[in-house]
Image 1 (tube, protein in one colour):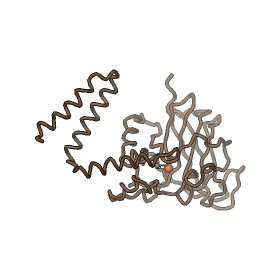
Image 2 (image 1 turned 120 degrees about the horizontal axis):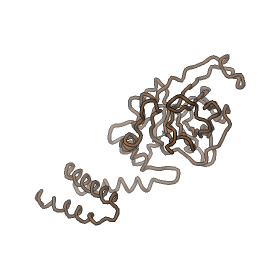
Image 3 (image 1 turned 45 degrees about the vertical axis):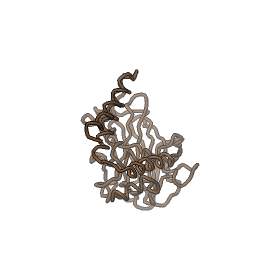
Length: 287
Ligand code: BEZ
Ligand code: FE
């Protein structure tokens, strides 16, 4: 088939979209067809390569369950999630930057008072998280919900180990000074789930599946514009090569070690502990 006759196919598909009742659906469909056809022209797949591509997407879909979202992993590892994030959340000046939500968020996160431990006795270096939430003028934001989660010291989330046990995650509320705090353990770097088609893709692309150690934070409440972000542990070996491209320099913090004598009076500790002290700047909700 000549280039001229193959162009007919693209034009014909595009022409059949023009009556789509929804303008946005029409323009998205047109862009999809234009870019998909250009992609096919560029790679010139054989029939068996195209069958393999369809087989790959089929396996991605078949791998999805309420606990395992392989399409999110595909979006994340192709940089699509962070591109959508970059186009939607441009931090104006001092606001804390956003990053990927990831697949391990759950809606039944336990709710805690500030200052409690969420590690359920898991082994690891003790961590104290001392946070503050302010607006862009530095005024404390009171009553904001903080939803946090992290990996254990072997690099697993609770949901990867148990269907029902919830630990190393929790919901807190900022107090009258905008502060929140909790005790935990240092998170570790970990491979994203790589036993499915996305893992096979990374291998075929010569890539590793690791994310640098981080703590997730999701902030929301009536007064604020919601924010999904992480804080990454400075010095982690994967900061420059995060498998999902989620690292932003402003989100990297030192988790310095402190002597037991520096622990808050209401939570004595017997050995050195790491501390994350961080102020998060949120935008007030548009009214
Ligand atoms: C996470 O940080 O939990 C995560 C993000 C993207 C893919 C896999 C895991
Ligand atoms: Fe994570």
